[in-house]
Image (cartoon, rainbow, N blue to C red):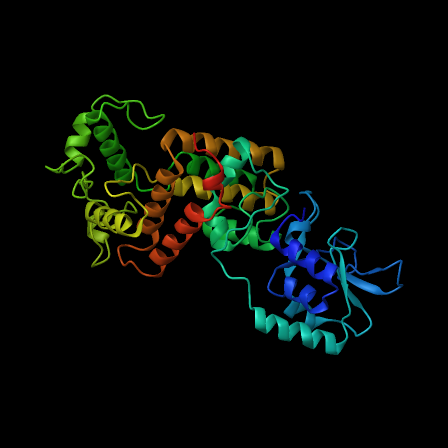
Length: 397
């Protein structure tokens, strides 16, 4: 079975003898060219033993080899290959030596055709659910990887990969460096521990949400959130933090009430940008809109924001693997830990999904209901409605 949809389309086109179909299958996709090691030729050319032709080998994403500490790949497109191709005699070998192998002529006329197909197909868009059928599909590792699925969908990469690259070695390292200040294994581990500890979500809003959930569970005779034992003074904290609705439990008006002067990102109210509501009002607005748009049931409420940190933790692991700041065994253990902690904080994928959505919007949308909101709703619907989604295939408990 081909590992991803790209290889499936490529194999089907080859079986039909469809040259245009072969090019179409890869035209919008990332292709991977082996990065030269020190002292090696910049282009990893080889001679095809059956034809004698000189070929430049590239791999589709699903055919990347297992993680190796010294083996890197550069991401290229058909367009880049066509523009920089060295001569008309060399050929393009896609996935050589595999069941998905294709060799394409690369004369000037052929490369012009690649460019035309690329223009027709376009770049692979974000927001797509992708699965690697050779990756984990069941069990604790798959469950942990599924916690990072929103970010995988954002980038349209397989949700269940732990391997050679998230995007590519250079980009993964750049993401860690520029967005997370991670430059070495020690700083990577520090950020991972912080994410696993839920230290990047706004602490006061998180405490208020958990207190509200515990108070609601107490009213209904439940024991509270999974893995969240009652703490001394919990009821008192809840009373101070929430403005209780006079309606039934779960009423839309039962929104968090701030106990301090910090906004959703932890900034003091005095430094909150003009026009940005305080956290209680902001949470209430989002939850009301979530109910309208189907991210929450009619009387549903968000129980925790840590899904955002857990999703980032999974992808910090994937970026760390790509940047060679951690190894496969360390990565698997970390991802499984994410899955276990998610089960402690949430009771279902629906709760996890709503927590991720609210956390993301508090961080990036600030009540504008703009493009970030639209993308968040799209990702939510992909993962909760697509039959191939891990959130539908995997039991949360």
